[in-house]
Image (cartoon, rainbow, N blue to C red; front, side, top):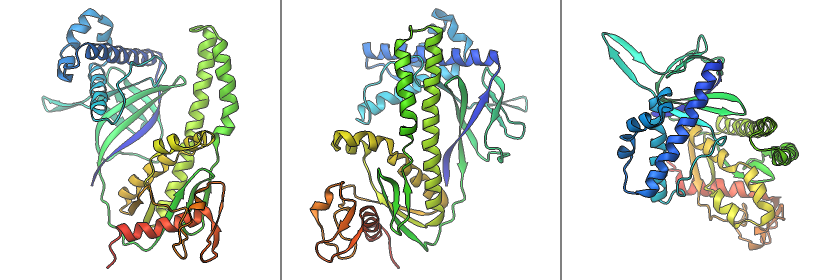
Length: 378
């Protein structure tokens, strides 16, 4: 099986490299916004037509010559993908990029052979912890301390800047030898707000709710930022503190989700969950619940379950999102519409008298429904 994996490293550039990274981020943003304006004036322009304009733009704007030319083309590929998603009704109309918001650029891997010598624009040396990137040359990296080699073909590298820290994400095409696992254990999981995950055998993984830890600091920094004179030194200092807080919040959530998903995938061979639409849940939920749904990171847990099961040869099934798992009794299959109320944390069956935790009852129903709909019994 061929899969695409991303390996993310912390970059430690020198002052010259930092300046060049910042210039490249600015140039890719400039050319993205410039071509988006061209597309707005003439929607019939193809991506090939936009790429052909780059040489003339480098003459008009000489600063574009200082950065990696492949990164400029990749910015136009991103713009083209944005319009494709818009026309396929999978996203909104592309917007102009703003400075300081998701500062990053991507460059593709290029390999050439000349006089029996191979030239590569991206090289990764995990033994000496060095990565070679176009224009930037060699940069020190940190990450994956026990990894000595990546067995795969490099596709591209994305360089990003977050709170004055620099990162590189290397996308690699790898061939995995996935051995089909003979199932010996099955679990149904219910993802939610109070507990991030509840399994059908009674295990619960609580919701640390990291937002409560960082929310007070985020609000204070946002107030401080609004009082500063824009583009002043104090403004940028406060902005860096705010970005750093958001970074810590994001990393804390990722670590928790990774630990939960890895534990579940390692312990069970068949995993069944609901097919959730987080966007619809937020739109349909009451106002006081929307923030909690967003903070619970349910979508990230489902995403990680999907690809980890694929990589390890395990089975992952999803039941229909409209299946009333919380309203059905896991013992007698009696449906009680009253249990739709989220305030009721105990399921009490009016037919057989079963009393059970609401989330455990739902996870059992998800397991049974998933096996019945998807698994082929011999």
